[in-house]
Length: 463
Image (cartoon, rainbow, N blue to C red; front, side, top):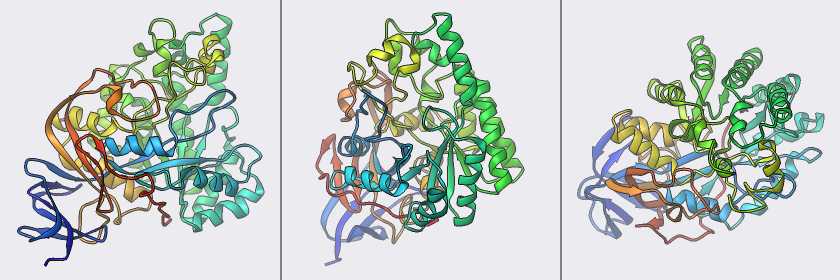
């Protein structure tokens, strides 16, 4: 008796650096053998003709997040992690949002209560620092970093979230002292408010003007400023959800100088354009997110960023709201102006199939870069590697088995999230995850949920 709980047999294994044919032996939730003819096991999964990949790590998702009066996010932890599993993901990193006047420690406690016993896959939390009081900066944030919350996000825009440059510097200084990493949503808040006010005075209030209110210079300027502030403090930063060439080139220049700047982009910036916001009536609200989708030239720039390593992270920025719902995209205030349309689109289940089909199948990127962009680099950036993000002896048995030839037309019913639409309805993709396994336990198999919502665990991370 070999002592394996499970063997994945006959598949083609790919990591961020290598591709090879071998069997995978699993015991007690970890990979304990790679080779051929591993022998008997409690269960054998036949992966002949399939790809055996590290489970996806989506390091930018929003679940159960407060979204303003009268607006409710479509996914809680149960539905969000379920949808993630159907999309081939084994770990997600949602955000703990600190609201104004709230203790950061209290925000963490509330999010743990929301997640406890309701996660199909593993979860680690980023923190959102919205109220950097002396108590937060001097005591709570350093203590939470020691407790395993080694990344946090600051916003340069949004009412109630935007920090001043001085506040951003203070937060970055804590990261510098503790070894944490800072994520930045880079858009110029004053410029957006100026443009929004002007558009509303002109009566230009439909969803398509959301994109007009947040043009490329708004993102480019803030990206440059965020990098400059990080350079002052000498702290690593991640510029999240980059949508265009000009912002990308700011990141490239910083990287060429040797600055510790990571870039992230998302499926919406490869597949959507601002024309999608120009739908009949309120249909364009389905595509309202920030930064907004741009144009075909910006899509090409984002592909170049992925191909050339300027972007090391490909995330979904899953931020779901129901469309046909007064607590979602059709909130009554949203009908009066794009200003009030809830910002964000669903995408945690479609991230991997879109990049595989548009990237690997169409020869824009190779399979190893796909693994790096969707799993390994997330684990390395956010303190989860080598436990997560690769297939190697000793790592968690977090695995997605793919049929690389399977053609699927994306429809919302395949995604199993809490929203009522997908921005990618009708998109045909080639390549689809057929099985998702978290720490040796199968969660999704052949389009059926077989795991339980108490299997996911919280991951404390090193700074």
